[in-house]
Length: 219
Image 1 (cartoon, helix red, strand yellow):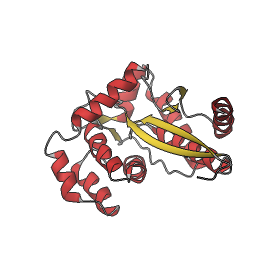
Image 2: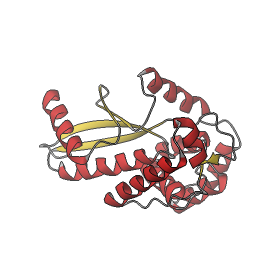
Image 3: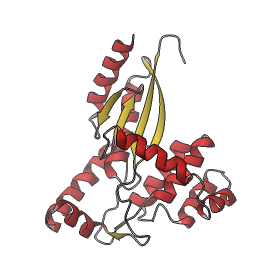
C-alpha cells in the first residue's frame, strides 16, 4: 500500500444468483480504478441466500419472480432486458432466457468459504457468476464447483469432500445470521470499515463520492 493511500475494508454481502450483485461488484471495480491513487480496497465476499427454501432442482426464474413480486411475465421480460443492458455497460454478459432456472446456493457458499481460506475467493465468485448468468448452469452443482476449482488450480478432491459432508455449513449460517441481524434482507450490501452500509448496486460515481467521504471522515 502506498503511504499516500487510505485503506477501505469492504464486506460485500451477496448471492451468486443475484444479477445486481455482479453489477454492483463490477461498478465497485470501476470505482476502485478511479480511486487507485487515493484508496486501497480490501474486499471480502459474505454469503446471502436469496432462496434458502428452493429445492435442489431449482425453479423457472420467470415463474418464480412473477410469483414472488406479483408481476406479470411481461414485466419480468422488460426487467430482464434492462439487466442485460446494465451488464453490457460494465462488461458482463447476461444470457437470460425463458428456460433459465434459479437455484439455492448454500453449497456454493460453503465452497466459496473454503476458497476464501485459499485466497481465491473473488476469482471463484466471478467464475460462478459467469457459470450461472452467462452459461445457465447451476452454481451449486458439484460438477460446476469442481470445474471452477480445477480451472483455478484448486483441489477438486477437497470440493468433493466439502460437498459430501457439512463442512463450512455452520460458518456460512453464522455469517448469514450476522448480516441478517444487521438488517440486510436484500443484496448487494457493502459494509465499509465495519460501520457504513451501502445498499444496492449504486452507480460508479456515487460509489466514488461515498468512498471519498468515508475516507475523509476516517481521517
